[in-house]
Length: 508
Image (tube, rainbow, N blue to C red; front, side, top):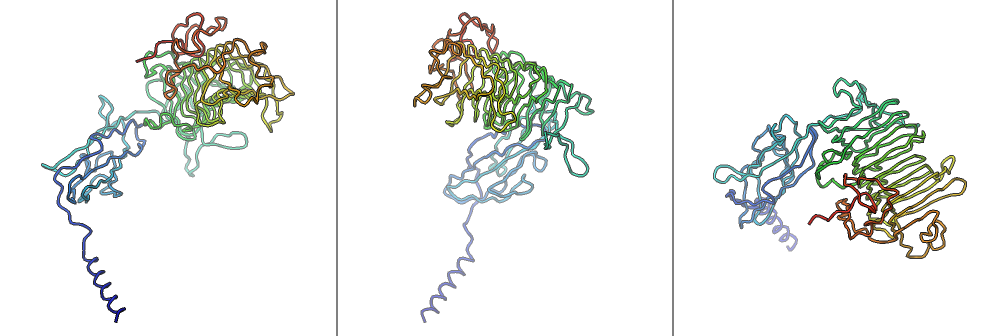
C-alpha cells in the first residue's frame, strides 16, 4: 500500500501546484524608484544605432505589483527602443501589465537610431520619455541623445552583393579611392570642418593626389577601417593650436564610438598608412586616438614626413611604426601602446626634437621607444639606420626599461640622444656591459642624459603630459635644439624644458 499512498500524495501536490499562480499582485501606486531620473544616450551619428544603455526600476514596497503600462511618450513613432526584463513588447515601444515582485527590481535596456532631422534644430537633441502608468500614478524618466550630422564615406556595394575592394599586395581589403568629383560628397580629398566624416573600410588617396584636412576637421573610423596614402600620393593635415580643451582647431582621427566609455579603448580601427612611394606628407596639430597602429610609415622616396604638434594615444600595437622611413618630429606626444609608442624599425632616418614618448600599457613587453635596423625574415633582413636622433626629449613609462636599441651587423646603426630624460633601470645588471647603453661614458651617443628621474606629468591616466617647475625635465634642455613654441603654442623659455610642453603651474 505504501507506493500507492505515495503516488496519491504526489498527485495531489502536482494538482495544487498547477492550479496556483506564481504570485498575487496589486496595481502599482506610482511609488517606483529608479537608478537615474534622466538617461543620456550620449552622441550618435545620424541614422547610426547607439550603444545599449541601462535603467533599473525598483519596487521597494512590501507588495507584489503590476505596472499597467511602460511606454515611450512618443509611442510607436519614437526613435528609441526598449527591452523590459527581456521582453520586446509592442515594437519595443509599449509594454502592458508588467509584474514586479516586492523588494525586487527590473532592467530596461535602451537604444536609439535617429536622423538629424528628428532632433531639435536649436541644439540637435533628440528627446523622449519613458512613462510608467498614467494619471495620478504617472512617473517619467527623461531620455536625451545628441545627434550629429556627418558625411559617410564607404565602399560601393554592387548589384551582385559584392563590395568595392582595394588591392594590397596579393590580397584585397574592403576599401575605396577617395573621389575629388563625387556627386554626393563633393571633393572627398578635401576634409572640411563643417561636418564630421565617418569612414567605413579603407579610404585611399589616389596616386598623384593630396588629401587635405582643414583645421578643426574630425574623422571617425569604423572598425577595420583607416586611411591609405598611395604611391606618389600625399597627405596634408593643417591643424592649428587650440585655445580650449575642446581642441577646436586640432584635426582629430578616432573611432566612431562616441560614448565616453570608449574614449580610451585601444584598437577600435586600423591605421593611417603612408605607403612606400607616398610623398611630401605633412602632419601638424593632429590627434590620433584608439587605433591599432596610429601611423604606419613606410615611405622611402627620400622626402621627409614632417610630424609636428601631434598627439597619439591608446593604440593596440604602435603609436608610430616606421620602416625605412624618413621622419622629422617636433612636439610629439605618444602614450599607451601595446608594443611601442614609437618604433623606428628596419633602418631609416629619424630626428625627434622636444618630444614626449611615454608608455603605460599594462605589460612588461611594452616600451616607449624601440629602434632597430632589421626585420627577421625580410629580404634583405637589414637596412641602414642612417640617423636616429633624439633632442630635448622625454622617454618614460610604467616599465623599468622604456628604450630599446636592437641592431644587427651588416647595416649602419647611427643613433644619438642629446639632453634627454630616459627611463632605463638596469635592475638585473643585464645591460651593464652592453656597449649600446653606456649613458655616462659614451659621449658619441649620449650627452647630458637624465636617467630614471620622474618627470612628474600632470595626469598620465588622462593623457595629460604637462609638467611644472618641480619636474626633473624642468630647464634641462639645450637651446641649440630649441623649438620656440611648445605643442599648444606656449613660448619656451631658456634653458628650455624637455619634452613637448613648456612648464606651467598645474590647475588646482
